[in-house]
Image: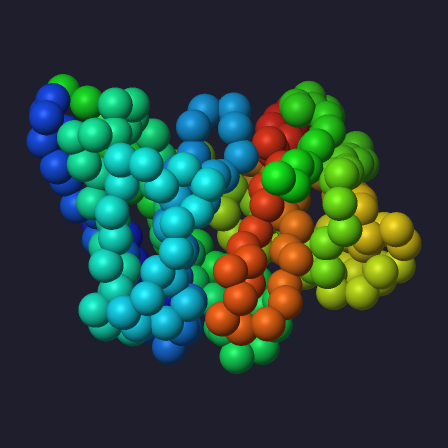
Length: 114
Length: 117
């Protein structure tokens, strides 16, 4: 089935540690996005990428890094500089060639601090 | 930056009742989207609206793109227990591929819906 796969489902980070969240899609979408969701809040954009080897900062990029070496993959690294990393992280993708195409989401990764 | 105000924040209703929620924006959007999120899962697209004044249905769900392009409404008729979840509106500016704002969504804070059997 076509879709967006995020892994792992749950992740624990020790203080001072970097962790990487995986996002893979087989929808042949050009654009991919990372969002952070905190309880009782909407989704906030961390980073997005419209094309391989290019990405842009979103509204809350500090403490995060991404790469886009392949069209299907857009991993997110939560660095030790992110002081409040506990949240639900969502990856999304969309078609770029047509304007205003909706984003489709994976099932998320819940990150917690040990 | 753009902000979306979604209301109500939460609703507690009896099965069979109709539900209405809305989003308002301080600026114009070219696309309005409505998503539903179940606990521990990602949002699922319910309805996409692309034209001011557009009224679109998906089963028991009906959504409208406000004529001013600054608001949108979602109605659920004859609610059932599986309607429980968080409903998000999202606005999209659109624009040209390669532009810095292309494809970016602005989300409302969500409406938590509880349906009592």
